[in-house]
Image (cartoon, rainbow, N blue to C red):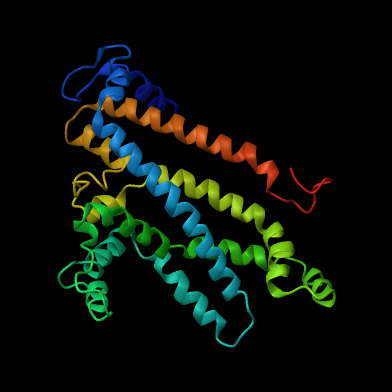
Length: 276
């Protein structure tokens, strides 16, 4: 493991095309990043995706977990239904998304055309304004794994606290805010960190849904997809390695910020002061 990491760091300072031996160019690859318009576009697309997909995914997963934690008949079936999308391979679900959101014959637009006032539904993946939101919807569709994690956390909340709060006259909303949310903060924190790291490396759905073009108009050219093209389409391995190290630094910084700030909102029952 150490060799590939060290090699990629070395190649990031080289002009390396795989076909020829690497030649040392110093900081040239990193300097070029600063003036590469596609680099900044892909970085913006990735930050946009992370800013919306991660919090929306956590919120949807948490709400679903609350619903699926209710003890009613047939709940196992409902839990299975919501979990199934998360075990579908990314390529298969991406192809399904292409069919569903096809502007001409997709099921989504077919339904929207029957809605009063909507005569011209969005172009979705063929429209630069709607392409990223469409992919964000895909990411939310597959929150089953996060729902399972949240369900495990919800079942660990002491029921005695709910009973005591109910005796005191607390409403369901008040019980959720004062009991459920604090006890769930470690799970929410875990989902936030993992979602953040995953969003910076988002690749497969964008590759499949756009045939690798990152279109339309580079609206879905995410960072990892751009890196892939620089390495395996342009054979600029040195430049791609520089991009990879910049991505690594960004992920580390973002993760450290989230971890350091967690002391303000993550509650651990075993902690002496209630939070760490």
